[in-house]
Length: 113
Image 1 (tube, rainbow, N blue to C red):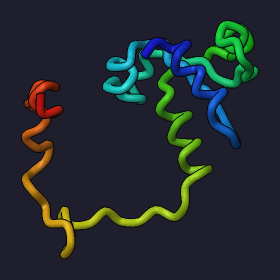
Image 2: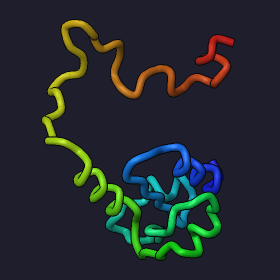
Image 3: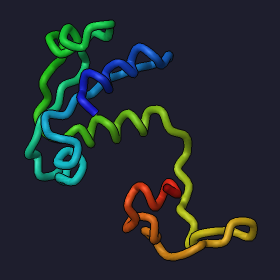
């Protein structure tokens, strides 16, 4: 999604809203480890209707947005719980090992077309 379209979500949600814009594409921004410090991001802009005005007021930050995201999660999340040792439970049995068959399917097959 183009970033200006994603920015519009700030006008749809309430509460403590923050917008962070990564300098790299959606794939590079996710797969590059934060420790590599290869990219940068913008944050702390003034939220409003105009995404360009937000970018003009935002601060460029060196490094990965992952650290910002991790800090936000820690501030807003509850107590951490241990992951289950095995997938599924008495009511919902695991169907197959991850990632599952569906990841190799083409969209028309998944949608039943």
